[in-house]
Length: 83
Image 1 (tube, rainbow, N blue to C red):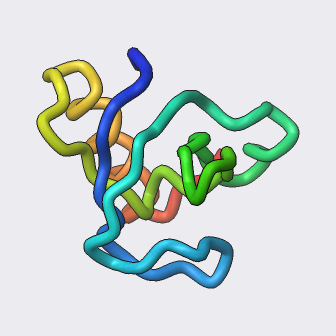
Image 2 (image 1 turned 180 degrees about the horizontal axis):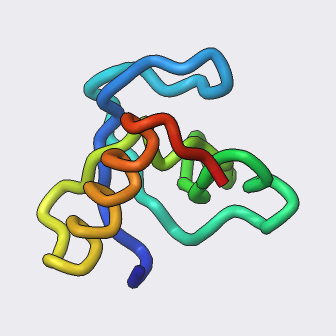
């Protein structure tokens, strides 16, 4: 995936402060140690970087590659797979 890109929160998660509809800038992948069971991405949030689950986001105006990567991850998680 190419970074940064804009995204929107689509679902509330107890592991994240984001609310549905909130827009963020995704700036990179979270460190490997944060992604043992789920894929996390780094976002700019309130003047700092925060790792949130990729499953919680959808791209806004992203290119085909990013859109496909996000959709693929949503598909696998919805089928019960994890890292």
